[in-house]
Length: 429
Image (cartoon, rainbow, N blue to C red; front, side, top):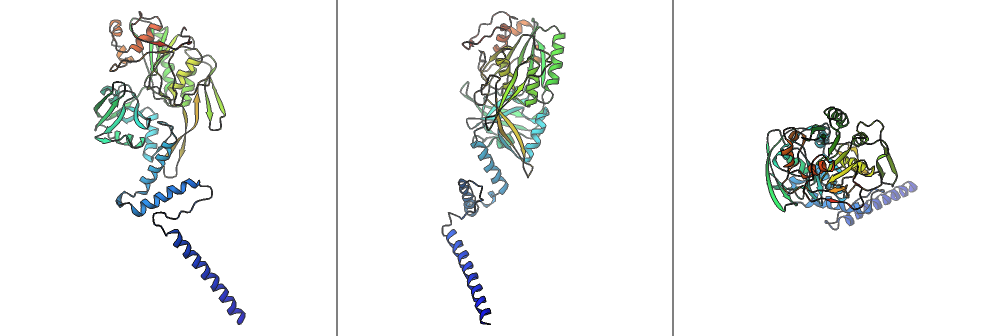
């Protein structure tokens, strides 16, 4: 019996020691309510403890209890993490609704104002308005910094929230205030949201010439097929030279970038792809291109991004034609999609693109062989407009980039505009 009592007393003493130790731990962990105790997983960076400290402080002390939406706070934290990576306008987090929108937009049809929106220097910016869209018709231009949407300041919002405020039901109105750095002015546009239908490729003959102006609006899943059809039609109409216009083309699918570029090259490489470990993969030209011999000039501007930059860089490095216009946007990461548990998604830049000669596209862009800036307020001339023009109308066009391209092909007389050819670049083709 004595042994039994002794064993019970020992067990009771151990139990009391555990309870006291636990109580002491709770007391010491909570002796300062502004520094809540945090349990950290073994593989979690020590710096992440601060996040949970802030989370707990907010949960315990923020005055507006209705604002403590766990999903909104979590998504906000994720967007902050993504922004800190510095892959502006490319790597991004998508809500479940945005995942569905992403699939719709790449198919070539969606609802909105018809502009690709990105981030530059921490601010939301118009990367490219789509041809014929409400944004393009209203006069919104690539490079416009978005300040307000319906009177609300959006300069500090994550990109996805800016896009959410711009989007809406078809037929509804949205007011967008922008700052245009080129002219140092603030502008306001009232737009009616509409269904955006984007043909991947369209063309027209430049009046009075044998030059077909081929415009590629985005590298969606149909572009290569549409381009081959376009080239065939243009040549049947008597075209002996091409101006290939990828201005305001926001890019799209890497597969299409390789296929489309290969239509203009006989051999060589389209691009190099470098992963996080520095390993490079080469994407070679696919044989059987439909326009490998015809003289070309490629038009680019600040709205040319992603796959459009791959195309321009490959034409340039392979000395296939002259690249003319303005330096491109500088989007050069490969986005790998990751599906998350709640239906949201992460488009993460897991690799970066380089031109065939190893020039980095990301944050650098593609510089033109011949620099020609479109004057402030001037608009581009697109194939539908060319179809209604005479040569006299064309020569009076505000689109001096197109005119300079036609001059370079010796299709029209010399145009009196300022241009700059990069030193050491051979633009004779």
